[in-house]
Amino acid sequence: MPLRRSPGATTSASPTSRCKQRHGEANGPPGPLSCRAVTLHLVRHAAAGDRSRWNGDDLERPLNERGRLQAESLADFFTDTPIRAVWSSMATRCSQTVAPLAARHERTVELQRELTEGARPNELLELMRAEALIDGDLVMCSHGDLIPKVLNRLIREGMSVIGGRGCERGSVWTLEVRGRDIVSGTYTATP
Image (cartoon, rainbow, N blue to C red):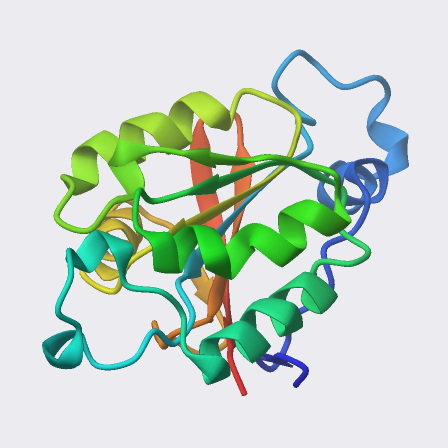
């Protein structure tokens, strides 16, 4: 099941080509922050079934069959993207969403409490801005309560949105970074 890209969306390019697209080759050597090749990919966990039918701790609720297919689709989506790290909320459904992607890129899924359901948006934004200073693409899997709050704050701060908007299960927001500023976001819906 391939992911659908929003109109106007492009595949994540290599760090070098993203730099050339942003600044052009004629600009000479980049300054320390002028050409950082950083993209943050904010993923909502894939389908995990009905919360009300799960008897255990909600953090342990796993993906259902549809969610497992979405997780494989996400791994396919990121095949040509050079991923430096894969982060997940503490919830099993999040770590299972990005596990196939992490395996294909030979990365370990790192659990981050700032991505967990009920976390404070400002703590996640602070973490994202700190990561924006490190070259490379970072995939972060979180929840439907937190992602819209973070995106709304970024939009209020001036982030432009390319294409559509949404936050369905298994979807991806690709956030382009310049310095410590998240300057644009592109939404990719799930099948």
